[in-house]
Image (cartoon, rainbow, N blue to C red; front, side, top):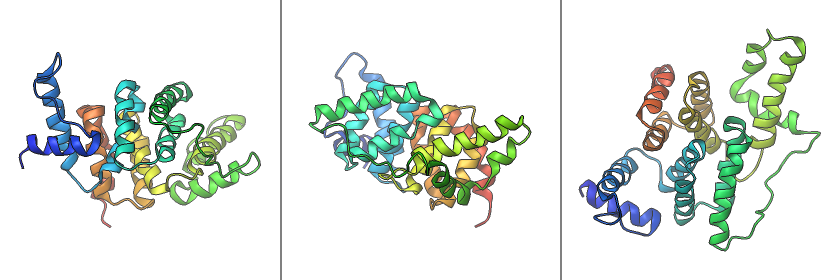
Length: 253
């Protein structure tokens, strides 16, 4: 099949609909967009439709492109992602994009859930308490990242040298990574794409590429995930991410 036929096939799989031909005010642009994303990019690499759509909603949340987030939340559900999986993808954005933008994304996915008759709030996925969140966060963080954050910011005044790594561990790993609903392999891959989409986070992209591989992702999956996010984040941030992880990709197994 050529990319026009592939686009038609993929649009049916994801949205249960057909691509634009001459409809709307800007059919030329939509044909370019749909044939590139759904006729080419969606067929490159090993990831399945569900994983690709989780990647897509991650980048859309980062970009705060909320109308598209709504459409792709529906597509996520259409290809078999559960509401809890979708919610976890959005929740874990908070340490990276901040709470206000995450709240915007939560409001968007909740609206889609309500439209589709999904009862809210969803079942809790919390696994830690106030007393255990630091300890449990460290258990998840240190096997993948060691103590690099504490070591890197040891130069700060004592109060901050203690607080910065602790806050990161408690929030990023204790409050979010510890939650059920997504496995750590998936979480790490999505965080890598999230950081690439942010731009200006090359050091973190490099670290999380290592983290994604240590969590069980193959190098090809890392490449495929970044490539799939490219139409939504743009070529410059995609290429910057590739440059940042070049040493990881070139490293022998």
